[in-house]
Amino acid sequence: MSGGNRIFLCGLAAFLLLIGAGLATETTFGAERRSFVTGVAAANIAWDKPADIERTLQDIADAGFEHVRIGFKDPLGGMFLALDRAKAAGLRILITIPLIDGAVAAEGAAPRPRNPHFFPAHGLTQIDLDRYAARLEKLLDRIIQYHLPVTALEIGNEFNWSGYNGDLPLRDGGAVVLDEAAWHGADRAAFEAGLDRYAAVIALTRTRLESDPRLADIGIVSAGLADINVAFIRRVGATYIAPALVYKAMAARGLFDAIDHVGVHLYEPLRNVREMTDRPGMIAEQLDGCGRAYFAGKTCWLTEFGAALPVADCAPEDAARIELMQPLLAYLAQPANAERIPAGFYYDWSADPGFSLVRCGRPTALTRQLLRGNIDQDKDFKGGLVE
Image 1 (tube, rainbow, N blue to C red):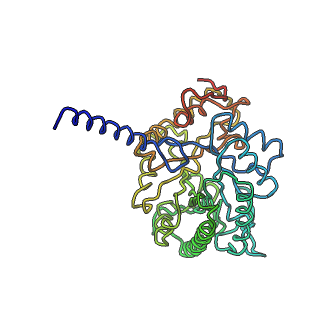
Image 2 (tube, one colour; image 1 turned 120 degrees about the vertical axis):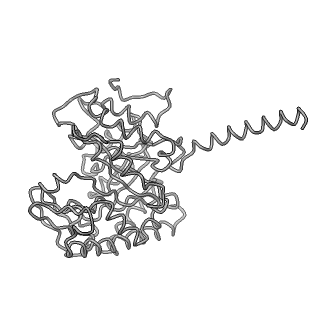
Image 3 (cartoon, rainbow, N blue to C red; image 1 turned 90 degrees about the vertical axis):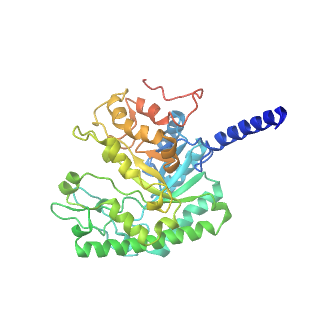
């Protein structure tokens, strides 16, 4: 081989390596780098006053976030205003569609009554597919008409416990179903009947999105499942089904083949519990199936994750929560993990007093930590955070 050819081939190889490195930074979650992309939840913003809706979404954008999670809830006027204001603020939107608040339940279906711990909730078995389809159509019409930057629809929320599934009963001392042997027979039958109805909702949504090229870029995310400690479940008298059992039942129904991303909620490894020594192990165990055969190769979106502070704690430096979050942020900073779990939404921006990122009237230092993988070093950061 001549020296000239050798130089040419070496140069070509270097060029191809550079191209490969550039391609490796692409991700299916927008046009971001292949690093974990953090959004933030403003799930109940439709209930706020119009001026507060606009201010909240602009504050989220000013802090540096580019993605927001919003719940599709009544009043529809407030909901549609929130979507419009999110677009105006330059935010891309994950919309969560509730399935238990009565908007999609069969006419006349009675919800599980309110009690001191829980709001009324319908069960998945009570979903009326025609009412769901009509509700979905209102949302999709708005998305199309106003060219809303919606990345995905998350169908349902935490239906593996009584809080968001009226099919799961409340009883003294609660019921924690960690394996097949712990099921109450009637509870299992009701839950699986609800899961059959949920599968029909997913299929209906998929068919509708695929029927219109204007909706082709909108993905489907399965409902994030509750990640709750046993002591709480027993104290409030709820029924809780371990996510692993639900995933097994979902796989049996082919649900992972019908969605684009698996919704995951992650809270337990981020709790402020002194005896919790293996946070990295807990995180790895909960996220190990993402992007692998366990979920039919589908990636995961952390549609909720977060850590709480005492409500009265101002703490702008937020050192305690930053420490709790470090094992998760370290896990997600690994490129291989970021490919399997490309996106997540911190819960929440300002509505929940315990989890809120806003303290002392401004975003805390945790916000900067969450955004480090999202923003360029030379990009103006408007949060005014304490380092």
